[in-house]
Length: 197
Image (cartoon, rainbow, N blue to C red):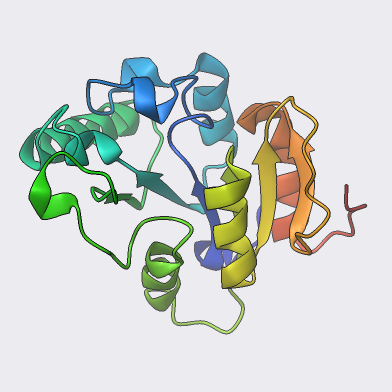
């Protein structure tokens, strides 16, 4: 059961590879609810009551696959569609930059591209409480898990591959899907003991 202060219990999720099966470099259309895995939709419902944030590197903007205005409109539609399914996302944060961007204005050093903790700090700053508990779920060791490590928060790696993750002290476990990670998320955010990895 989710506790009374669940507004200060936060789940950060990556978009490509966690909510969807799509690899970021293969996506030529902005986010859409039809991209989300059916089991991820189930997982998001099971995580209702927590604050949910999506944090995504959206290099499609940087490479000219779609414009930022198209992405913003698509995200607004995605969030509205999810609300229609009784799934509420607090915010969808994204970085449009990439060091090899084809669109010159996005080919710049930035403070928001994961593994930067910029969006995590933005989200945590909006929860003015010393009792914030949070976890980040991502499929990339280099961006997602490193981001959580630098931020000092727990993480769960979504993968069915065996990867070398020994250096990550805050990595709690690996899981093949967001749905299969839900019990671990509940235990983490409700203060129950867990066996790490």
